[in-house]
Structure formats: structure tokens, C-alpha cells
Length: 448
Image (cartoon, rainbow, N blue to C red; front, side, top):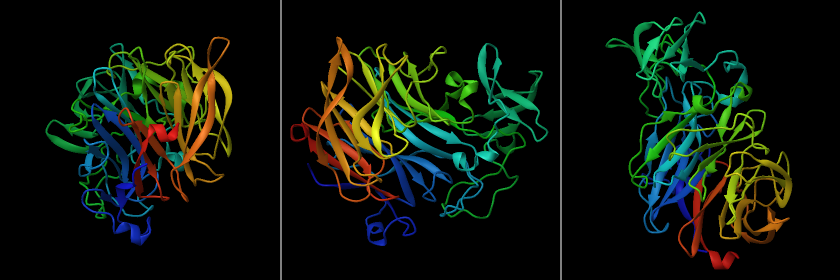
């Protein structure tokens, strides 16, 4: 194991011990950080994170990355790759005048592109104030044989956004308005009308995060969770604008939250990209792409993945995929298995991996499986547990766990593992309740 490196570090003593905030600088800093994702693309490590204004699961939250081209020894300066619209920003959990991103999940497509899937919310508090989410407003409508986003005015009338950004009324007549749906900027001709993802009519004079602020448009996108996809074709140096893919995979049964299970996705041996999601009622969801993330699918006959909550996946050499979920309380880890390349899933009971209610990360190398997780009844004492796939009746049926390696003592929450090279794996993890994200490198031979 090599020494810890601080990859993201908060600078606000309200969220992080003041001694640790002194480690925050222009290369790694921000007000607060949570939810790590770590991937290797080519010979480059990419670390992604929620860069938060208020240390909560709402407020002004950007997506940030850092890159390493030498196996994690040195890292690039922090780079912001997705910026939400905001009316106001505050450096406290009283900040709810902004849209926000949350929970990044990356994978590498067969063509080498890095795909980053992330949740996006219009201005609200997300799941922490469900009463203001738009349960009765449909976020998409069928237009020209395609599911297109909808907008609503203050009287509840709906509008449809066509593929060129034209806003059509309920009779599908052009209104003269246009919108860049993902960024939310609404225009009538050349006249700027505001942002469809924000509430108020005018920007606030409170802007503690130094963001570019604007105001709400007369038409609004329904308040709910959306899935936005970013893409990099150069190992994370540059990124596409976020693209909304929600309408491709959403069902009526999902409610107002079909969200990302943070960490990493999986590109299977056959070249299928599979991403882990879950819905508000805690069921897991698997979506997949067979064209490098351009289009996404979900099995209509089996819309849920027979697991619970936030989950991650590994593939055995035989092709079977095992999903590990998040227990409702301290105990064994829920498990599911797919034998058809991630399209459908079989409930497989629980595996003997004990953890509290917390996201965990899991990767496989050959027959070996590595899982990072808290090893106590609370989010504390991080470990990497190692196991091997085992078979029953001729096919993979689970994982036999046999060893643990300590990552840290004390607080340990969300984490992400990746293979660095033939000899090493790396872990990116939360080492404080907010804002202190560390990286460690381990020799594979020392773990197994």
C-alpha cells in the first residue's frame, strides 16, 4: 500500500476540521465534496466528485474531476465539467435556490469513450423535500415517435420541446420559443426569458459561491430527478455538454426518482455498457447500451433488477454478472445475478459480506473480487474485502469472501475502486463526514 493522497479537500471549517481545511488549495479545493467515482481510461485515472456549496444533498452542486497519468502519483488541478443553473448560492445547508447535480457514475465504453452518468435536479431539495416534487406532471410526451421533454406554465398547461429545441404548445404548434433543454435557457426569439430549471422570477443578490446566477422562466421543467450523460473521448481532458437520457429509460412506475447508483458502471465482455440505477422505493434498475452510450435500453418485461437501493456490479470470467446492493441496516449484503449480460436479474439472497447501510464499491480481476466498504455497524473503519467467484450446478452462484485489508480507522463512507495496472488497484474514498476525499494504491498481490 502506498501513502494517502488528498484528491479533493474542502476549505470550509463548518464542514471539515479546520486543521484539514489547510490542505485545501487551488488544485483540490472547494467548499465541500462528496460521492467519489474513480475509473481508468487508457493509462489515465479519472476521479469524479460532487463539488458542493453546502455539504448537503442539495444546493449548488457541480461535477468536478481530477486526472492522473502516472498511476495516481500526481494529479491535475481540479476541473469543473458540469455547472447547474442557480438563482442564488449559499455556503450552508440553507441553500435551496439552485438546480444541482449529484452522484456521478463512470465507465469506459467499448470505443474508449469515458461515460459519466449523473443525477440532475431542477431547483428543489430533491428527495429531502418530496412534497414539492411534481408527482402528477409527466416529464415526457410522445412526439414524432420519440419521447420528448415537457414544460408547464403556471396554469398547468403543458408544452413539448422538439429535437431542435422548439417549444410546441399542447396542439404541437410552434410557440416561437426555443430552449436548450439541458442548460435550461429559454428564449422568445432573441429575448431571454429565464431558466426552466429555476423557480423565482429574478436572481437573488445572495451568491456566496461566486456562480453565474439567473432567474426562473415562465415555463418550467417538472421538479423531479433526471439522468444526464457526459462523454469524454480524450481520457477526461475535455467533456461533452450534459445530455438528458431519462426519457429513454423511464417508466411510470418509477415515480419522481430514477437515480444513479454512484460509483462505476460495467462494460461487459460482449461490449454491452450496463449502468446501475435505483428508484425511490429502493428497487434497483439496470439500463444498458449496445452502441457506446448513444442510446439506452431497459427490459420492459423486467424493469427492475431484483436488488435494493444503491448497488454495483462485477463480471465473472464465465460472463455471469453479480450485483451487490446496500442493506437497509447493518448485516449481510443483498445480491443478484444476471446470466444474460445485464438485461435481466435473478434475486440471489445475501452474501456473507457485512456492512452498514452505505454504498460500497466492487471490482473483479479474473476470479478475484475486491469490495471496499465500512466494516462496522456505522460508517467507519474502511476495509477492502477479497473473495472469489464460486459455482453451483455448473454456473457462477456467488462469492466466497476470505480476507480483509484495512483502509483506515474512523469515519469511512462512500468509496470507489479501480484497477490501475497489472499489479495495483486504487481506492478513492470519503475519510471525513464531508469534504475530505483520499486516494490510496494497493498491490494486488498484498490483498489476495
